[in-house]
Amino acid sequence: MKQTADIQVILNDKTLSRDLQSIAQKVHRGKRITEGDALLLFETADLSFVGALANFIREKKHGDKTYFNRNFHIEPTNLCIYTCKFCSYSRLIKQRGDDSWEYTMDDMMNIVKSYDGKPVTEVHIVGGVLPQYDLPFYLEFFKKIKAHRPELHVKALTPVEYHYIFKKAKVSYTEGMRLVKESGCESLPGGGAEIFHPDIRKIIAGDKCTGEQWLEIHEIWHNLGMRSNATMLYGHIEKYEHRVHHLNELRKLQDKTGGFQTFIPLKFRNQDNEMSHLTESTTVEDLKNYAVSRIFLDNFDHIKAYWPMIGRPTAQIALSFGVDDLDGTIDDTTKIYSMAGSEEKNPALSTQELVEMIRRVGRKPIERDTLYNVVTDFEGVEFEEDKQFRGYMALPVLN
Ligand code: V47
Ligand code: SF4
Image (cartoon, rainbow, N blue to C red; front, top):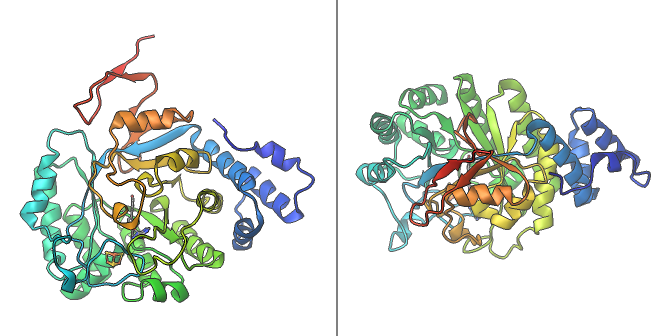
């Protein structure tokens, strides 16, 4: 269901510059746009223009289908040896105190067990980097999860952690990723990417893995036949050219491996971090960023809006600006964004709430698993009122 201008209106608009006309023609014909085109879109195109093009691509790929999954997060610790300037979540080891946590293996297995009998399909594991969370620890943790609940998909750790734990264990990236796969980790989340360009990365995240290392670890993982996600942290000190460079690095790797499933733009939130003096991007900018990402990343199947970060209303609008995925039901188990100033203080949505949120903007909710297999197509499914149960009671409608 379109909420933006029709692409035909754009194609017939004689007031557009030749360059924008040419980009619209490329999109209409399914041709790839260049880095220069993407820069031009960021710098000169208005929101309705990029929205129309992005929505055209979104609907060509997915129609009104809008995906989500049922997952929970485990964040082993919020202590971290690194000092990323945008991070509101981590505490340095010397700040160990009331607002920090370090879960043991048993603590984390208890979290996994607390979901026994609940219809979640994925556990998303990511947190700070600390020496005790080393390669043997994580390999054992993945094995324990799979032994306890074999069908639960383990989506775990980013190249930031992998780079650190492999170095400490003195294993190569290739050997390390092979062990990780063998132990039951099935995909990588998209975190740690930030901005690949060294000019920006060295200022905001100078002491963790480089952009090249992030890309190399994902490439090795893809070559093992595995899938992963990608993110970009935007709306801080980067310029449009850095965003385009980042998107282009992802597009090049995707051309080589095809291993990325989804791209997730992450809006910089400015509460309680070393970049709090920066003004956050506007919602117009956020939507434009989704749209240009959708247009540029022609070889990515999915663009995800992470609703705990941007809030539910913006996530709904984003579905008309290239986004086809809203992440998961997230049972209040991530602290990353509430600590950084998101309007979602306790991010939890029941399946019923998420389904209704998608339907209210005219889209079709589909529950997927991590690899985008359909778990439930909610077409014609109504809900029985059950306020106590945080899952859902879906009843097929018999017409
Ligand atoms: O890498 C940290 C970001 C990321 C802030 O793959 C911040 O399905 C904004 O990657 N403002 C971790 N962003 C989260 C992540 C993710 C989230 C949802 C789904 C998936 C997926 C991956 O969070 C970090 C960093 O880029 N982050 N602090 C902040 N103040
Ligand atoms: Fe540590 Fe990740 Fe925060 Fe950087 S973003 S300080 S690596 S927890």
